[in-house]
Image (cartoon, helix red, strand yellow):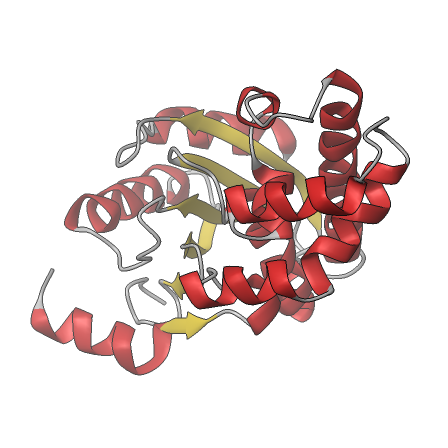
Length: 238
C-alpha cells in the first residue's frame, strides 16, 4: 500500500468500535467472568435451555472459553458442543439468539437510506462479520434513493482471502435493479487495514459496475474491534 494511502486511513478512514463490540482483552474476559455482565446474560439464556443444575457456573465456563457473550453467540455449533455441559438444545438456543440479534440489527439498518443510518448499518455488519473466522464478502445493494434492496453474502474464503468476481457482482446488481453498492468484507486477523489485493479488487468491481451506471459507494472492512471505510480514507474515486 502506498504511504499516502496508509496515512489517509490512519487519519480518517479507520475507526474504533464502541466498547460493547471491541475485541476482548485477557483482562476484559476475566472481568466479564468475575462480574455480572456477559455471564448474567448467558445464565438467563441457559436457564431456559439446559437441565444443568448450576447454569451460572456453566455460563461462566462458556464465557471464559470463548472470551465474551458476543463470541459465544458467534461460535459454531461444533465449537459450542465441544464445551462440557452444552448440548443440542442449549446450542440451538444460543444460535437462535444470534439469528434474532442479527435480524433486529438488519431491520434497524433497512428503515431509511443506508447512508442516513450509517451507525445502524455498521452495528449490523459488526454483528454479522466481526467474529467470523474466515473471510466473507458481502454486498449491500441499494436503490436510487440509497435504500437497501438486498444484503447478500457473495463468497466465503479462507482466513485471509475471498475470491470475488466483478462480472458476477455486476450481473447481480442488474438483476436487482440496484444503482449503488456497498462492498463489505471482514479480516479475521482483526486488523481492518486494506491490503493491496483489497484495493485492486475494489477498483476492478468499480470498473465493472460503472459500465452499467452502478456506483460503488463504499467498501467497508470489518475487524474484531475496528473498521475501515474506503470512502473516508480517500480510496474510492468521487
